[in-house]
Length: 133
Image 1: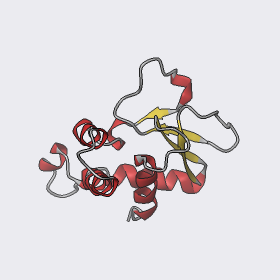
Image 2 (image 1 turned 60 degrees about the vertical axis):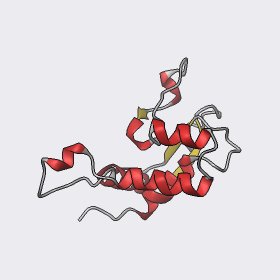
Image 3 (image 1 turned 180 degrees about the vertical axis):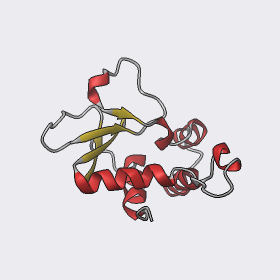
Image 4 (image 1 turned 135 degrees about the horizontal axis):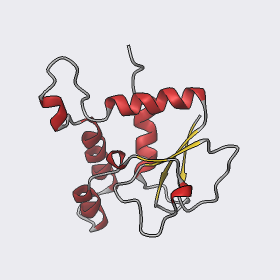
């Protein structure tokens, strides 16, 4: 099962499973035992996050831009004409496969009760990702 929650919320060892911090910034003073892996590339870019926090983007526009960032090919793809990652495609597939075998929780710094958080958008994209062929 793939869950989402705030990294500040209590750890539930039975339900959380493998905890992935999906933010660009780890957070000053955040103990490493609050997560199992930090995947900074799954967080929104610094520029996109700053624009949203400044009020320059609506939540809907932020969501569209964040998903576009997840799907945009990286510089690594330029040197690989045969197999391209197309952004985070393989990372999303890996997390989906892992969540089909065990519990996985996506974490960010937003408050637990926050509904406008990229962790929900990320969860949706992971669940939409196609299985590896």
